[in-house]
Length: 124
Image (cartoon, rainbow, N blue to C red; front, side, top):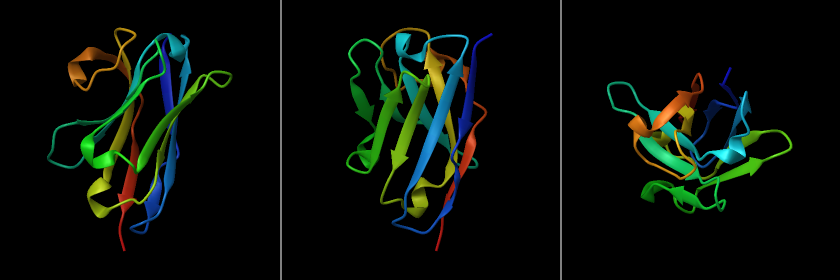
């Protein structure tokens, strides 16, 4: 059965860094585009980043460009999100998801499997 298991969340000071992990089982994650989304209380889930299975291309929401980096380790069947220069507005629950296809999407409805979510808190 397909599974995505997340780890690496926590609390940091503004300007700090965290790395999130998304480990896949039941499929090779390099056959699909994998995205990261986040959700704050009372808000809808929003796209953060995505990595394509076809060419390894990466995509970021405008507010994350230059601060966040998505990557993949095929041997570990794991996708990572390195988050630097974190801001309080980055606080939320972060989810990794698998698309129905091999290309990236920023739309929630195009993802068919999700990790359990992990809390990221940025506070002084």
